[in-house]
Length: 58
Image (tube, rainbow, N blue to C red; front, top):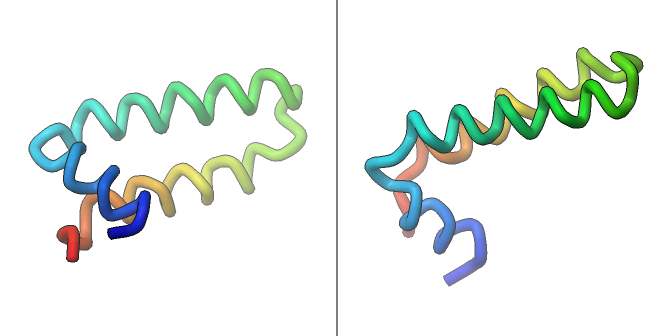
């Protein structure tokens, strides 16, 4: 079982909290980069959220 699969199984049932954590992390990175990479950070946030929402652990 990969690390991502383990993380997905831990987050099962806590998707809303995971979304908030991803948003907070993205906001922190965006502040530290002074908004230079806002588009890339937003895209990475969405990818991370989709990873945890869509696919059940295998």
